[in-house]
Amino acid sequence: MYHKEKSIQLKSSASALYNNLSVLRIAPRCLTYFTVVHANVVNMVSASWDGLNYSHRQLQSKEGNVATSSSLIMQAAWCVLPSRDLLVLTSQKGIQMYESDGSIMVYWHALDTPETPTAKAVFARGIAAVREKYICVGVSSGSVLVFDVPSKGSNITLSEVLEEHKEAITDMASECSGNLECIADLVSADDSGLLCVWKSGEDFQLLNKIPGFDTCCSSVKLWKGTVIAGYGTGQIRLYEGVTGILHAEVNAHARWIYSLDIAPFTGLLISAAEDSWVRVWHLSLTPETNSVEIEHMYNECVTDTQICGAKFCDGDGYAFAVTGYDLSEIIRYTQA
Image (tube, rainbow, N blue to C red):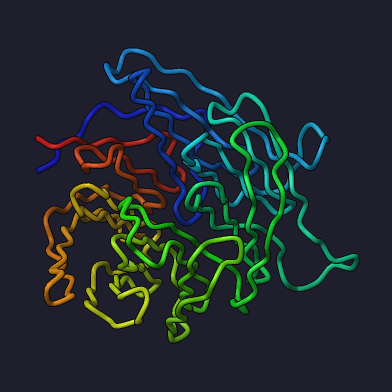
């Protein structure tokens, strides 16, 4: 189904972080941007679709106006809003928002760090763009910060703080199908596996809490009202977002799942784990019976690699990219 393409070299290797790959497709310019986190640096690569041109940029962890910082970056992800695309970095010190090409930092939000050192680490992790103008970011306290983003400029404001999680946020996802009829448009996950399903607006509404049975949910997606969650047990679970009904449970991997992604136009799902396997699945919805089915489509073993990021490069799932811990390259696959 897929075959391996030429890899993209990185300036430094990937850290062992959940969801450690982000992809932004710039169709008008025939470019794809990739970001991979290494310690306190984000490796950013711009690749032309013909595979002939690559340009590299490295973004440093920052603290406010300080040029560089040693604080570890936890995640880097593009947030695509109707009016603009922003690159969001989360670290142990705060949240940085850049123009999509990484050229200008437009916003900095410092995390509340305790005066005296505590046993609990402080960091931000979990990034999602929601509806017209919101970017939501999770923090280690369990809070979800909601930022109101103007269509241009740097007047970004913290509009709301959602306090339903008690454990550190691991990942967040917004409704990716483009279906405006879906009631739920954000899901947040934490270290205990708890999933919170939200409806956005001037005030975000909690629609449902789905318990996680003390198993970390490391990666989560939301597609056509269905929550797709990957766990430390190697399982994938499919829930009806609003009701919390479990549609399916798959023992997908032998080890901890690090990354999930979905191609919204086709319902293809990719899962990647510490067990070196990348698997592609197909989700199908039957509206009449309100049921969701998952079918296994494809396997790829990246030998001796602890995979930490896997993302489709387009909305149809025609191509996907993979990163692995200590690997200084992005491995790409396209449909045969």
